[in-house]
Structure formats: structure tokens, C-alpha cells
Length: 117
Image (cartoon, rainbow, N blue to C red; front, side):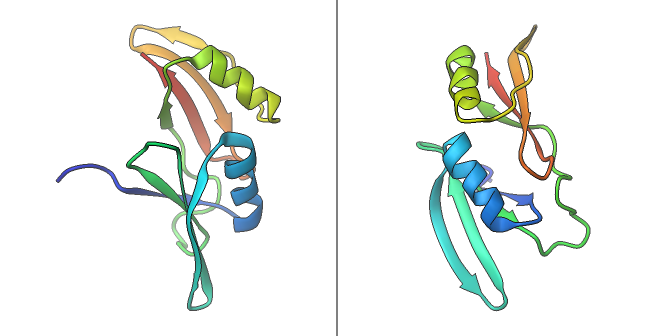
């Protein structure tokens, strides 16, 4: 095994979620295409090997059920400010033994945190 390649993010409306992740968080579209009656939307952060896909077809994975995904940052204060300027509701920056964290949620309530060591 080498790395985590793809994380499925359960969403209600793929277009609303895509707009949030691209315009507000800073993801880029890797792939967007139809497959059968579904739509595949894959997004990634610049320079990252791991990407996400916006899904709405897993019955045991309801929209908003994904929590605790960390996005590594080298400057949490800068990134929190940038996200806030783009309309993302950010939690306060918490400092712990294992780094600094600041959380946010997507439109469905999926929970993410910025993390700086």
C-alpha cells in the first residue's frame, strides 16, 4: 500500500457542494463526467495526491456523515483568514500538543479541520 487516493464525501446536491469546495475552499476539478444515471465529480487541492469525490449514491453514507478529515497547512492563520474572506464559517484556532486546528463544515455538515504542526 502506498497512499490514500480518494475520499468519498457524501452530499445532498453535487452542484452546490462542488461550488462550495471549488469557489470557497480552493479545490480544483480533476474529473467531472456522467456514468450511468450518476455524476462523478472528483476534486483535489493543488499538489495533493489525495482527492475527494462528491457522492450521493451510498445508502449507508448519508449527506453530512463524514467527519474529522484534516487538511494540512503550513500557515493556519493565513488559511483561516482566506477561507473566512470567501464566506466559509470557520471555528476558532485551537492549539494542542499535536498542532493547531480550525474546523469548518460544508453545506451538508461534513466536518473538516485545517491542521498545522
